[in-house]
Length: 142
Image: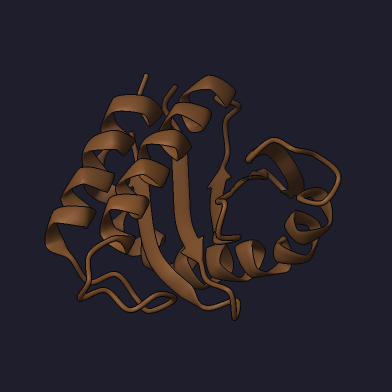
C-alpha cells in the first residue's frame, strides 16, 4: 500500500528514541515533508495517553489503531519493557504495519542487548536505521 508513514519509538519518559519517515510516493515532496515533521511528532505525542490506556485492556503487544487525527491513523505496539512503537499512517495497512512492528521489535531487542546501549537513550546506529528503512520498504510499500 502506498502512503505516508511516520514511525517513532517512544521511551519511558515520553522521549523519542528513534524516528523514521517513509513515503512510497515520489521524492519531490521533501520540502513538504519537513513542514509535517513537527505535526507528526505532535500527533504521536498526543496519542501516547490513549496507548497507555489501551495497553492495560489487552494482553496483545500490537494495539492496532488507537487514534485518528484528520487523515492520519495512529497504530501502536507496546514492548514487554513498555517502550511504545508508534506509527502514523494515512492508509489502512494492518498486516504490513503489524509485520513491520514485529521486525522492528526484534531489531530493538537486539540493539537493547548491546552492552554499550544505554536504555531509554536515542538510537544513533546507522545499521539500525538501514534495517528499519529496509523493513519499511518491505512491509509498508505495496
